Image (tube, rainbow, N blue to C red; front, side, top):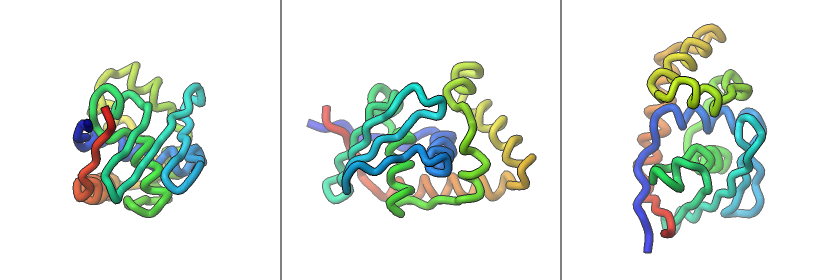
Length: 148
């Protein structure tokens, strides 16, 4: 039995890019990776088999909210299965995502704060929005599901 996963909140694309740039994605095997959380306290175990569409990760988004969590997105970026923008990733590699998400309790608010930070580093809102859109469009082409 499987549960279909939905597309993630937009902010998760940026969180994944930051994980890639921060060197927090460790490839374990062809289908497995470990992704260290932005504040280092957790390591998420990720599995992807895109041929069958089966993926798993023990992050909260994938486990409890049934969307494709940022550790899965980050692993797919590393493997070239999703777009990645090194400049955006580099600007996000030191962001403490958990602190921001818990402090503001709104992905929309956190996204606006992150965009402000990116603007201060010379990355336009338009470029950020296009990157997120490209990743989500590509991700929507996969039919991903997780085991129950």
